[in-house]
Image (cartoon, rainbow, N blue to C red; front, side, top):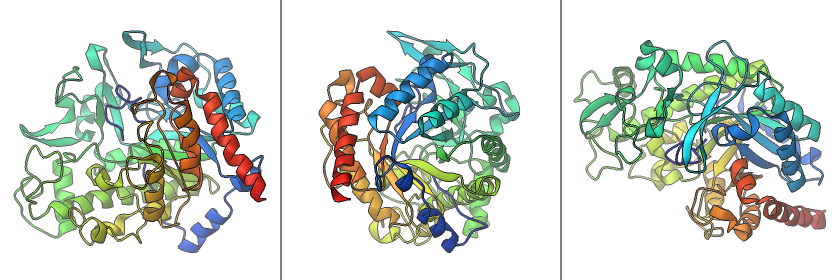
Length: 467
């Protein structure tokens, strides 16, 4: 998900779905039958999610079912009810059975001061091992799926992986950026120095590309063959504000806007723009709505596909809680009842609201990734504030769990934020419909198990007193 964060993502940063075959009443029935409230050890308690990043945990789990079982038992003992197993990391290959792309045999990691690959030699099914161990313990097992990611050019010359590197024809799938130097395909950005402004490790796929969409749907079709309890899309978005400016996107935007000619890309965004421009070209806001619609429409396809294959499957997304700037990723994760143009007139036009996809989802995970000293508060960049804002944005149209990254933001390193981890449960779970924590590797590395358990126990005890 996020790159833990520096190397598995590079930027901290899932995305939602529509019932093309289900009406609003049907969706409400799904929410009403939400299973966790009756299956938890404490009646009425909200679920607690733990994300398990693929690359960060690969050296621990890739060759050891024993380590998987050991750590899931610790999660269960701490009060976790759900795990989210990352089975398609940002390099775009997978850790489950499919014929549409390659199985992962190595992923990057740090060992001391050495950055290298960890090799997988085991042949057993990675996802199935988590399903078996998790279900044995009574945990819900959800699959995390990096959506528009096609490959990775690793830092410091380590190498490259992914379908876009194996197949030269797939370069047309990769996003085109609107940079100062001109329109550049991310495959042509070849620096492996993270300090280079043009370093581009994760190669994003173009959400507008029909072949890309079908490829991803094929991968999801095979993923739905597993006995998973939920599917959470990660990186179901654009790479950044500068993407995608390919000819495919240009043509589809012109159809969307109903125009026959334009000065591209200047009528949308000056080359090299990386944040909200002061003087906006005439199609800037329309372009943002077009990108949000592209993601909205794709998510609708995913939800329809997944629910068609497995009607009981919970389909959701992970998104970063920083909604005020999330338009840069081409995503409107709010409810389509939220008046975006009224609240954010600097970048949202009247159409942007239409493409809020929250109403289509079964559940959402919100990254409330604030520093360790910003647990409680009202607005963005506090854990509690992120969750409070999510409640307003989602309008009770979908249930959500928010929570912290207990490793990458300032203050968490070296296990120095035990109190913040404990408090994060209270700050987040009481503002939403559950608790979410990223990532297993941080909890294990900094030994935050006791702090996590203390926070969850306090919450569960409060529920018992009310019952």
